[in-house]
Length: 535
Image (cartoon, rainbow, N blue to C red; front, side, top):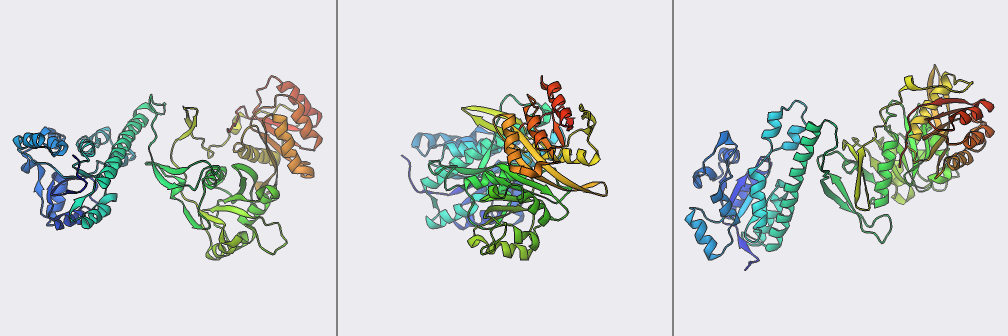
């Protein structure tokens, strides 16, 4: 029968990560716990004068295969797995061992090694830990009698437990640690499979797909109040959860969606100060300009009403001039609107102070960091997992593959505007349309901004949405479409509003008809021969 409180009389320590090891071992000794340790762990404790016995010597376990086999011996596993029942205790006594009450173990750093481009195949394989995960699994299985400590993360809470209970652990803690130990071994196995698949398959998709992640924080609720939700971080990958929130209310589930959507929009525009305004994951405005304040002003002017309660993303340090413009300026008759989230790589101290004071201190201010290095885009639909390579917006259009089917050819300035428009429409959900304008100086496109962004279930509907937003500003503008035009009706709509140039993939059976429509309106058309769907 399981006893709630069990004393820890002896502990086995075998750790690759020795962070906090000595302090933890000394604390265990303070409770009278006898310590046994394997090779490197034993040496580390001996050097620090911590009283410890060698596991190999104590249990007379031979080491084999140049250290490949150190702990994989049945007397040791019998000591870990034994129930505290007369028959099993007599049996392990016959093997010359006694029950082990605590196992402290973490694993070879496989993920670190395989992430090192200089690591050899032999180094990678030798860092696949076998004995460690086996001991941890055995300890977790026998949680009724064994306390497993699978990470330095738990050292402090284990010592506190022993302190509270006079050197004993509760069944509740042993269960919790066992559950976490099995999660760690599962994650470790997944990292090995994924790492070897990436190394050996050279970009092919593996037969099995695994994703391991750790809880970051619970959300108050999901997209709607009747949905529970939690935010996880993908293990061994950088993520937006590592960014810093500098001010404002706690982030909701929907806020997290907006942050992730907004960040990708500016990817690939690192060479210019750029700004995007986003609402419900959709671009409401985009611009770049020599100053970040100017870029924001141009982006916000695209659709100011849509920006209410939205997200602002900029790719440069926010200065005081930009801070004056972003977020609602109470009591001011200006174009400022209530802003839920502001994202930027850094903030001037005065700018941050100004932003923190706005909107009853509720504006959520995020300091962005590294982009995620997770290589996949994953969607789960009705029990089916759809996996594709994550789009890399830093890869630009191959201009050598562009063709020009219309009589009117774009001049250099128009072509630059079209190429910039194409980069923006790649971020717009299909069917996506962008109407835009720009300015040149010294043969460079210094200013670029959207006038209208449309997404709709049919192409001409998206054109109508974008044109309605642009209004009279559409005259002499350019247009980008993420997919081909199936009919000439969209070109007719664009031509009637004075749009002067269009970039689109081409490839429709109606290409000839579409080109003819463009010629009638003297629209210059560029074909990319590649589409840019985003669903």
